[in-house]
Amino acid sequence: MRQVKLKTAVLAGIALIGIGTITSCKSDKASLPKIGPYDNSNQVASANLLAHWTFDGTYAEEKSGKAPTTSVGASFVTGVDGTHQALHLSNGYLLYPTIPALSSANALSSVTVSMWINVNNNGSTATSFFALTQPPSVQSDWNQGPLNIYAETSKDPLTYNDTLVLHSAFHIYSGGNYNVGGDNINDYGVRGTDFQTVKGTNRWVHYVMRYDGANSVIDLYADGVRVSNNQFRSRTAGTPPVGLGNIIMNTPTQVLIGGWPSTSAGYTNSAAQTWQGLMTGSIDEIRVYNTAIAETDIGYLYQLEKAGR
Image (cartoon, rainbow, N blue to C red; front, side):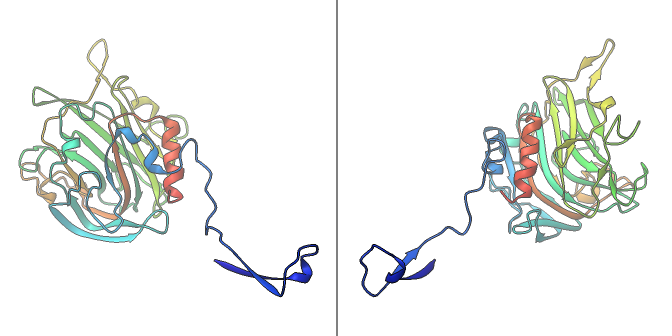
C-alpha cells in the first residue's frame, strides 16, 4: 500500500483545491506466466496423482492424511525452492501404513514417481529413496517390490564425487506370487550414448522414475532430461521376447522412504544386505501417479517445483 501526494499546480486544467491524497494499491507480485499449460505443479496430471508428500512441516502423505508408523532420524530442512521445508534423514527412514490408493492389484499398472533428492556418494552403501513394499512381516526379499527407487551411492558400481548413478526397478506378481521384474540405471555402456551423466551430488536433483506398462518401457529422468540406459528401456521375457506389461501388485502395500525393505527397517523376513544403508540426505515433493506421464510434463513439473510453484 503506497500513498502519493499530488499538488494542484501540477495538475493543469483540473480544478483541485489544496493538496489531494491519492492512494494506489499494487499486488506484491505480478501474475506469473504459465510454464507450458500450467500455473502450478499440482495441475500436472492432477487426475492421476494418487499420493503426494510435501514435507512442508509434516511427514504425513497429503491426500490420505496417513502419517508414518515409524520415524527414525527424521527432521525438516529448507526445501528445493528455498522457502518451504523438506524431509531430512540422518541414517533414518519413514515407514507408512497402507495407503489405500496405492494398495490395489492394478492401482499402478503404469506409474510415475517424482521426487527431489539431495544426497552425497558415501562410498560404502546404496541409498533407497522410495519403496512400495509388501507389509514388513510378509516381504521376504528387498527387491520384490513392487517399486524400488534408489541411487548407487556406494563404490560399486564406480561413482565419482560429483556424479549420481540413479537406479530404479519394478516388480510384477501373478496369483499372489512374485513373477518377474525389470530395472533401469543411468550407467553401463557408453556414457553420453547409452546413458546420460547426472552431475548431482550435494545439490537438489529432480529424480523421476516412469514405467509405461502398455509398452513395457522404464525410464529415468534427472532435472527434466531422460538419463536412463537405452539398452534397458524395453523390458521383456521369454523367447521370442514379450513385453512384461502392466504392473500387478500383491496387496496390501506399504510405503518406505529412506530405507531398504530389510531387517534394518523392520522387515523381519528380509535379510539386510551389506551394500544397503539407511538414508542420510534430503527428499522433497514426492508424487506418485498411476500413469506414465508425458515427457514434456516431467519437464514442466521440474520447472514448476524448482520455482516453488
